[in-house]
Length: 410
Ligand SMILES: [Zn+2]
Image (cartoon, rainbow, N blue to C red; front, side, top):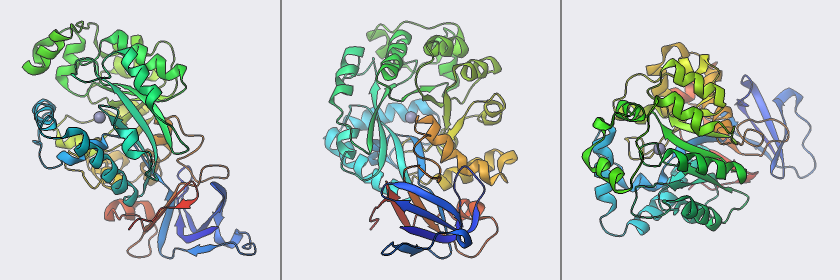
């Protein structure tokens, strides 16, 4: 199959005007300018996408798709009241049925937005069952939450839950100790070591709020009462030493690829610890604005050599379209220095996002040998700046292929 369009943006190189992508079975065979395209072989399908941009399928490394059913029901503003209300509404009615349906629905929404690969965390290990037959590539992160009233709460329960996940060509299991304020440091470390032993990706929420950062230095006074009570009930040890020390302890074994979600509040030494550890950070610009956080240390992380990727977080933060283009539009507003850097902006949702998920050798760029995960987005008009035009207009994908197979979007 040969796809051609006004632009091909390979993800790891500058966009090609009048470009083509040749696909053989599930792989990219060739990419380049149309005037150098091979003549189609006999019976080879040629798809002319016209005034459009072909990109690698976009990658959203961080979401909680199952929470999409609570979109519009949770308060804008600081994380803690949002979290308290989330815990309350989750307990109403048939949580499993509702959240399983939401995970499937929002995986399809992702495909419509041009996302062909998602990193999805699920509280009760529902996500993989909900998504197993959905034709999107996914890392299903099994969440360890020690203070919860449902498993997985212990390393043994986490191990069993990981064992339950039936992986397939599109589904990879991952491990997610939830956060330092819900999982003892020793268990978070053991969970990440489990991921490494299984050669699977991991992720943990870190430094999301000022109260969490204070907590990591031993100041528990900012924890909301309900959470503090749950921490006492679970005999969660109080940490000390701050974010940098926590990261060094967590990742000293140099684990397999993984990422820290958010990293909103980081001192320079914390960033040095993350750079030493060699893991990625996933920043979620619209959720960041929704929770009213201070400016994200994106530039300082990048200056220290840390890979930063862009995700959406759950669809319950005024972002239920799950559009990576809209995340990048928000990022441009908050980080003016990157506003004109189209190549980097595209990498945030392709190459760097693949790195965060430990999949950069397979997805995130259109080059020979990579999996043929491809999206095509319509342009309103001819343009010299195709990526800027997509971020401005944030269209849904016109066509999407995952592993060379077209996904029917309607
Ligand atoms: Zn999250």
